[in-house]
Image (cartoon, rainbow, N blue to C red):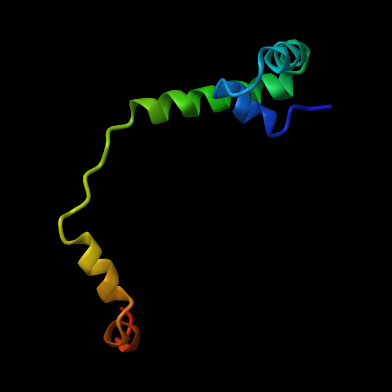
Length: 77
């Protein structure tokens, strides 16, 4: 049996101590789950290091304009 969705919870530290212990015991003997856990941890590290992006001041207006009837009738590129 594989960890499935518990891999993400394990990487994020969302499992109880008992669940964490059980999941880590499984990972030791399961190369597939070990690889998934390492990938989840790598993704977590990458996201933690990502810089915040500030949206352009006119973003809301531009998005609303995309939904206007005029924008929907405009021919595509």
